[in-house]
Length: 112
Image (cartoon, rainbow, N blue to C red):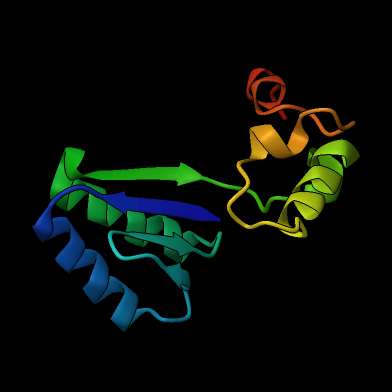
């Protein structure tokens, strides 16, 4: 998919118009950003937007996030356990302390 991010009011207006006119290309609209299908038409529209608004538009290629291949089991299990905690006010660092769950500091250092 293509992620198109706008950084000016004029670029946001043009993006909104593109999204309304070419609904079949838009996977999801996110306010000042949009995800486009990975098609030549989507690339054309994104590039046209950048030509019109120059540095006020950023285009990035994305790929779907597969949590089962990209994220270690320990992290997925920690997320599920944390959401199932008894007290919703418990911060993760306190929750993970004394358990097998990875600490926030450990997860911060590791890349996916």
